[in-house]
Length: 370
Image 1 (tube, rainbow, N blue to C red):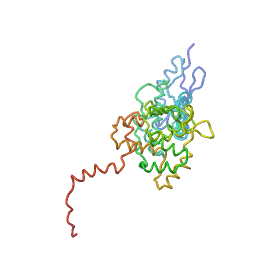
Image 2: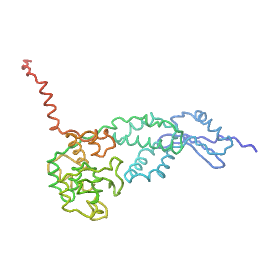
Image 3: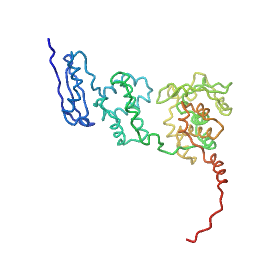
Image 4: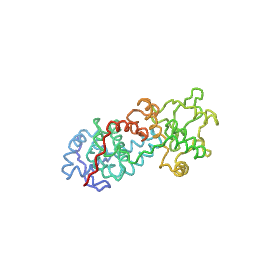
């Protein structure tokens, strides 16, 4: 018995991200459909020409579905079901928000094989988002294409999203605030417990705030004068530290140890336990209601919890610590990441410019009569 040749049907439909061509066909009696951007195929005739290889495979026994045009929406759905649950709570929330607010409205119905780097770059350019957020959009688009190749939803090859450039994606949008040692001490005296100790631990060790709050008494070795950073507390979730490099043992100065020894607790207890939940304190509320008001009252610039980490990096940058030692102290995976942190305080830079100025010293020019 011969198999009837089929082409299916094509029609143009409006979508939120622009018009698309919808090709509908049957495989073993089951209706299938694929979508193609109308911007790529101006007239229906161009689409039929593009579909010729797929039509030949479709009518060659009609034994299998034709994976000619997997949409980015299908990749996102699989990503959400199979990959997203493996990520941290913060990453899950960020990716889901970016899918729903940004990527889905424009690309959900578009065939992944038809998405061009130049179109994605032009789209990202007009998004009303901060440059760093645009870079996150690009990174997530690249991750979708990587997963599509891994799941064999498209041919394995060079990820086209690597060609997309985001202007200003590495540019910091606001000036980094650095604190002096005296300013941190003044904050310690002004803050109430436990936030005074949270600030002291974070500044003394250059920790991320989520690392400070996830510390337990058992992480401290008071005899060896060290602390082991193994976990983080973010968005109500205890998780592993950010990277393998972030899992580190740090030396602890005597002064900090003496402050903590005064209230040393059980090894399994949190260093900063919440009185409401069995978990550590949450930093966001304290930032707005405790840390920022205290800094403003002291006449300090606007700061956040990460200010202590930036300040620590500036302090060790002005010391004799090598770049590798700075990387290990900060828990960075590479030296390059550390170059985006901190900055050298003006007074530490002054001797270098004074030395250059001494070499370039000239006599003042006579006043002009003009």
